[in-house]
Length: 87
Image (cartoon, rainbow, N blue to C red; front, side):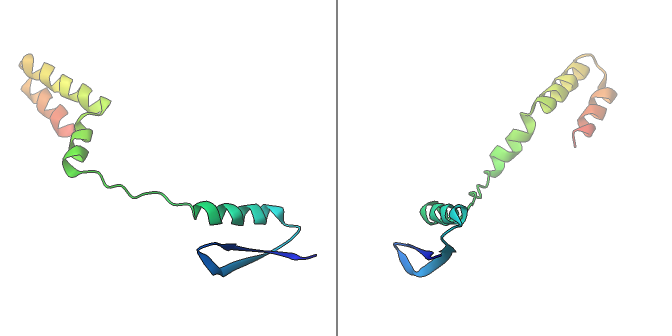
């Protein structure tokens, strides 16, 4: 059986030789040549937004409401315990 030779247009020196019966490898290399390797972007979150996101989660909001209610009822010890549990 013959071989297929695949090369990207921008890099003709980089060639892959694939046996003609291995169509899955041929398809894999064609897709790799078209779109490149799998990769994800490393997106860093802005520090103030990161801190704000910690306070806007559902559990944090419930704990903050509990702290406000405890302070409103005059139960300062319980409010401080809830506040310390958030750390």
